Image 1 (cartoon, one colour):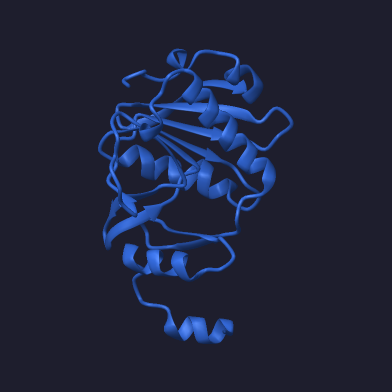
Image 2: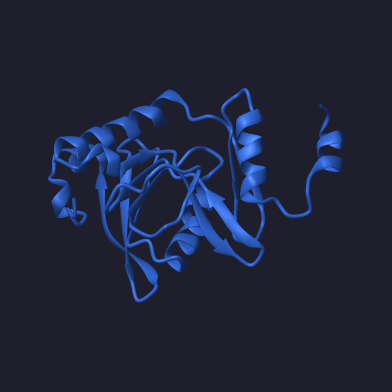
Length: 186
C-alpha cells in the first residue's frame, strides 16, 4: 500500500482501537503509539541490545522477588487526553498488583515505567513521555540511555513533576537491590 493510500485512509483521530488494529495488522513488529496531542508514532521493532537490556532489568526484578504477574514488557497503557485516550507502550512496567489481562491498561497501580531509548525516540522518551507520565501520576520513570554505560536516569514524581533522583550505569544498578530504588510493594 502506498503512503498516499494510507494518508487517505487515516482517521482524523487515532483511537486506542485504531492502534490495536494497526499493531495486529503489522507483520513487521512496529510499535504504534499516540501522544496526548494526538500525534501518531510508528517505531521499528527493538534491536537485540534493546531486548537484552529489557531482559536484564526484568531478571533483576524477578531475582529480587518481584512477582512475575506484576512485571510486564511492552504492555500498552492508556493516558487520558483531550480526544479520549492516548496510548503508550513502555519497554517495561512494574505494578503494585497484578493488573489483569487487557490490551490497554489504566495507570492505576502502575509504580514504574522504564523506557529504553532507541535511535529516533530520544525526544519522545526524554520530553514528551516525561510530561505525559507525570501528568497521570506514575510515581517512577526510568530512562535507559544507549550510551556505553547504558546510563539509567531515575525520575521520581514530586508535586506533579518528575525530578531526577539518580543516574547510574546499568551494570551498577543490576548489582544493587531493587528496594533501594523503588518501593517493594509486592
